[in-house]
Length: 257
Image 1 (tube, rainbow, N blue to C red):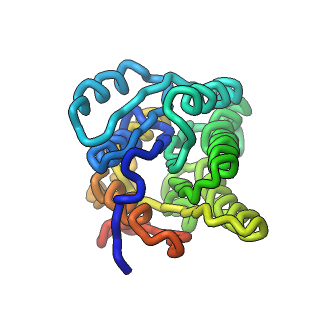
Image 2 (spheres, rainbow, N blue to C red):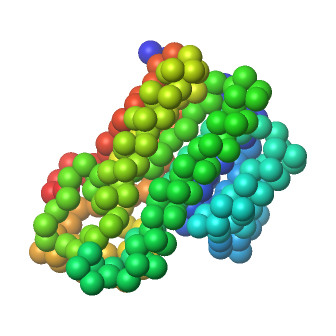
């Protein structure tokens, strides 16, 4: 199997949650590979800094401020992309969100906030990207960024609705694969499950990585760097047109999850 990113050069890739962590790392790598990358996130200031830093690279980066919990903002963002840059060829559904809200007494609004970003936004972005791909006869690629917590749930740390959303992401990827098969479509769908990566999602959850490390591994919890996950994205996209990595899990060799 020959791995190559050549067919994506000059093509539009949309990355959600592009202002930090894994999303920001994916943006940098795809721009370096020559893609026209669009970042969707609320923190436009961070993405604008990244756009300036990426100026002069092989590809280009175009930030769009978008609250992924608001459907109209997602739809408007995709319409702007179509008008200014062209149809979407690659979609990386990377945005993820977590809140401390236990199932026994948590606040409904916090549960809804997690569901809106982790599931509904993913579905809406996927629908809009596939609309482009179908209208322009594009054999595109969609990657859902899942989690090892979508496969196994540790009992030593409070996780509430977050792992449920990640299990659902895996199911959504598989259901989409069936739907695309029924349509005889060559659009690919991949569920990518990173192991533990120290990113700002912990801040949103209301805990520190150090607290998580202490709870799960006595303060010595191994974790991956962002680059390991970014390399996984490039591997997935580099596969030949008729080859699909439907699911990929990337863990640290010593990770206990």
